[in-house]
Length: 74
Image (cartoon, rainbow, N blue to C red; front, side, top):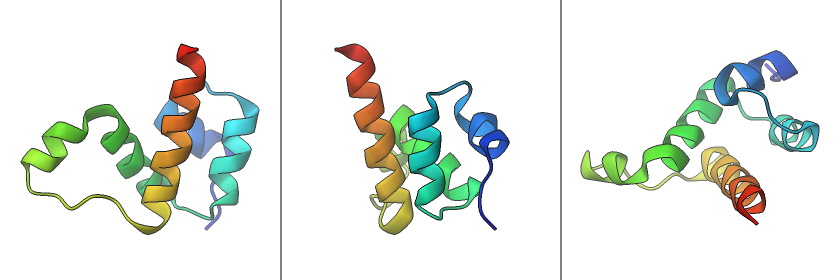
């Protein structure tokens, strides 16, 4: 099922409409978005648990979130 604005905001909080559109366009699920957000927020802990690096849509989402985070810093 395609995510909605509310699904994205439920995971990420208030975010830019451009990011919301990009996230929805991936076709990912809310669970995949939550996993990508976990990787961006705390990758060392996940690697410490022995988790493999994200692939597929989760990796795509993680890249989008990382790029957005980097833009906010600049």
